[in-house]
Length: 248
Image (cartoon, rainbow, N blue to C red; front, side):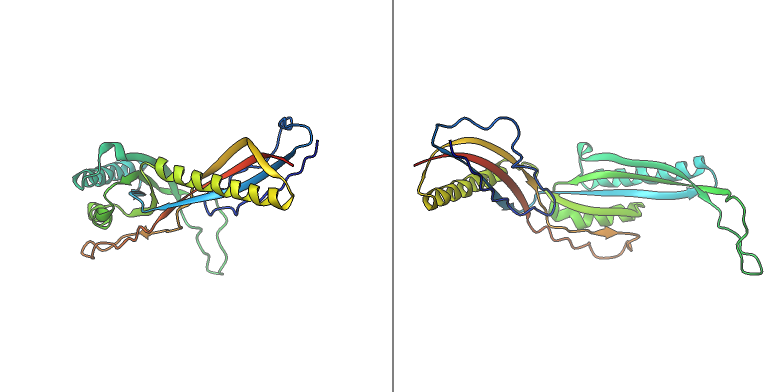
């Protein structure tokens, strides 16, 4: 029985890189005198996103942990209330971080220019609290950001764009990937004077590959125009590794 493998590994995406083409275990059974061909191919489907995910939060400081936490809690309640008034549902708001950290004194500089060597002292506390938000009405994204800043949010990071229901787009990418794999198998079979008999196995990997779009807002003026955001497109990528049985 002859065997050869011709892996054609697709280029890795910016976000996800599937670890395929790793052949483990016994070689698939094929008829004596036939050839086993392994081909990897990728498929891509691009869609306009319908979901934006971002983080919004408040950072506060106080002389004591309780003082900093109290101020932070009051501010975060206003931020969450503003999100709900902007039409964000409860299920689309989720706490993503809550931290309390001490603030240390800076080393005192001596007259000779050196730094006083002593253990830093705690002079206060800093509280960070943020929520992860799913924005489903992308046209309102800029207005929601402005509303957050007006409510007291001083940390807003994002967005990350995606599809709420990606199944149809992924299926389109799968169809393209399988078509490419079959076309390549036919090409290699003809070049070798063989023909494709059947598919022996299929394995898959892949996922989103949205274009990098870091957007950060810090202390935006409340009377500024709505923040412009371009959603662009997101790419859904699938990589398949297919084994074919070839015969003379």
